[in-house]
Figure 1 (cartoon, one colour):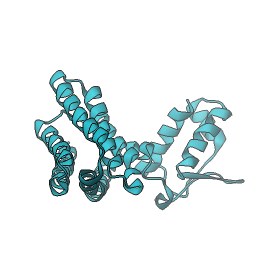
Figure 2: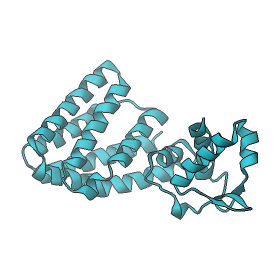
Figure 3: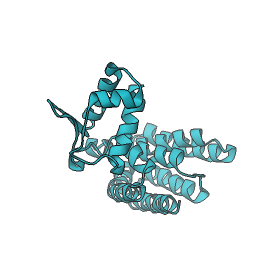
Length: 222
């Protein structure tokens, strides 16, 4: 229940319905959601962990400025993608992916282990099979496996630290927007797996740039 309450409040904050500086009282939230004080406090703690609110004595729960939010949190990314600021979030996501993922692909082509190469290839095979079966959940799982492995195969911990962000983006695209796998996109994933296996950094990076462009176009056309 606390998660449900925090999701509703978080979505309101991200959308701008509840502006920075707004003070909310626990008793008002108790009444609105029909929950106990312990549930409300837990919901507030979840939002505090994302730096979206701050408890102030004799004032209440105050919404913080956007510059303080943990915008890389999967929950915050989901609230943006599900709300009126979706296009803005998609632009930010595409800019981040354009910087990080081609570099990850380039580094993976130089540093990936045999096990990581195998995992990339299996993920592509899984994406192909799931697309044929129309199994979007399985397709998403394989897609996340692919991008997670690629980032980790860079063997750069700062690059790999974006795993949760990319996974949240892929989940949001699949669950919050009309989505059907495209053969073109699967082909780009296969090209990356092949380029990593043959140690071709330029080809791997270029194929990843194609994926990012295709994803941006698909998400902005909704």
